[in-house]
Length: 456
Image (tube, rainbow, N blue to C red; front, side, top):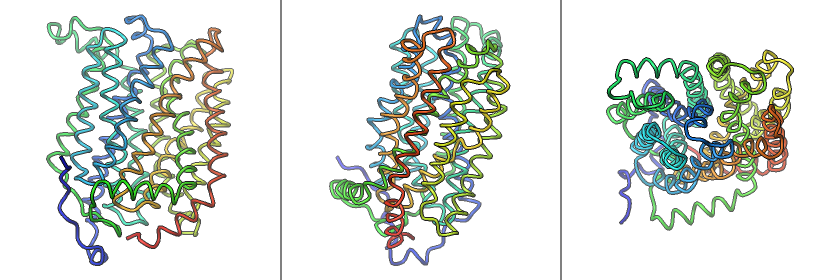
């Protein structure tokens, strides 16, 4: 049974005369996509802020928690990535966004009823399935709401969703137990039998459901643009996709692998940074998320704005390698400040290093979305971003979380072994990212020149 395509777009020859959506409409859609991304991130990482009570209640090891935080989420996130991308390229993208967000939120709700490792892992599997749609659908939508010269800024604003989601999760994590206790007191007959961490998961699932309903009511599908905007037969589309990957293989490998190295470090930080401050400096579990939020949210928002600005600035100056340079800079920051952060003698100095890394938190993501959509034709963009998401899930999300857990359990086994474990992830990811990006820089510049023959 074939997937129903969206209504046929306007012929490519006539697209130049068709105005782009009104700026107010476009930025409203971006605002909703930011919220969808943000609450998806909250659903994804809130469990990392509840590691200690979850471990205590379910009797899990650091390695088992690493599996739940990483591979359990990444499995369906990875396997469903390319099918989600194909759906994005052949069908309406708006329903794909809200359906994925709805599934993620419901899965988080289900995790609140987990009573063992396997039930918690199953809930994380479902959350990963929902998140598989986010990047392909959202980035494809943005490419058809903004002309090429404005996309970097739009992608930068969209990337704010990650920082906002992390900030919300950290703030919520700081007050989570108190909030959960209050809710349980108000609804003792409904929630009285749950642990407080389970109640937290029930609470955080609600906003995503509300945003999904708002998207259903107010967002419509935009006109597709690009020289190949008309959908083709599925097998033809798949053939063109792999041909595109082959043509730009070195450029795509550099962008994706460089970005994946960054994501590996980010996921390791998201999964274990609160635990790092608790174990290394003896900080209270309720205090760390509040401080991380106070640092992460403003720095993350500034990072998103500056990333788009820097990419636009480089493009205006004819730097076709702009996205490569931006991703490389974030990799360098992880290699230096990220590694140093783990060995600071005081928590104040560690938080200072965290500020430095947070100021570049979304640079690689913004640059990656800009790069992939810049060198990929319209009807292949969903699949290309999905391929990146697939590799991210398979390599970065899985390895980032579980690597630190394994190193902590089997290599750096002392009471503060989490510090060198996290430092190893930062140093390895940063160095690998810089090397592979420099290797593919000229190939990416060639791909940008080629893209100018069909970009609208």
